[in-house]
Image 1: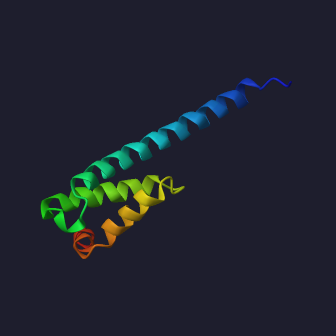
Image 2: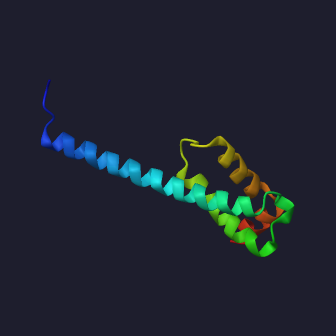
Amino acid sequence: MREQSPLSRASAEAGEREWRSELGGIEQAESALRETLTNYPDFFSIPAAELPLLIEQAEAYLALDKDDQDPRVSRRAHDILSLPEAQEVTAGR
């Protein structure tokens, strides 16, 4: 068995740390989005004051989720961003 050089081992470890960091960010964004969606299972029950937070969570999740980790969460995030109210909020930025 061939021994791995210290440089390639360090590179592999750095890559794994970066991957774990990205995964942690995705999991955190997903958790925040899921928690908010659990509070408001019906889009029509989302108070207007909560919409900017929900939009922010959906955008954060989609920005981090390059590999579509959980298609259901991605679909919900896209649904949130496609709401007319959400488009009004994002257009005002």
